[in-house]
Length: 159
Image (cartoon, rainbow, N blue to C red; front, side, top):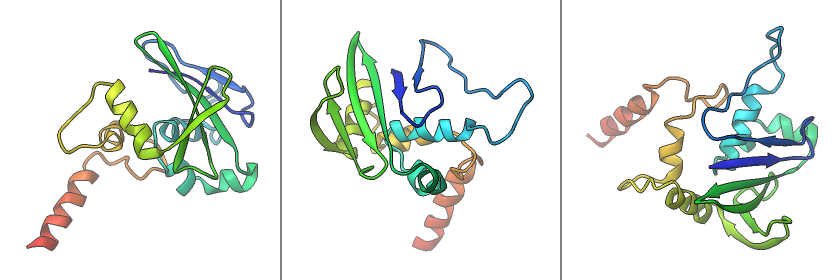
């Protein structure tokens, strides 16, 4: 499970996740544009997605390139990683001090997550599995029927 995300661009530099439900909520006066959707896009980025880069490019324009340090824990073993916005097709595997030990392609990283989350489904990648359960404004996947519409269009082209 994802345990922690650190970024020096956050107001609260470190976000810690707990077992069970974790919620991203707004302030007491229900303000808009305070970063709820951006935080969800960052979590998606941590899980191997690219929409934070491709659809939130204004964030990088304003903040510059930055990195996320994050920790996953599986079977009481912690795994440390870094993913940057400028080299987003790669993830660095680190030690507990976040010293980089090895850098791998994002596909290798998501295969690792798929294995650790025990979600080996025939012909489905980790991103394909995760993407079905994430609804975030700006990802253009708010319509739960959208996946079926895309498949329907592809089938019509084949005929």
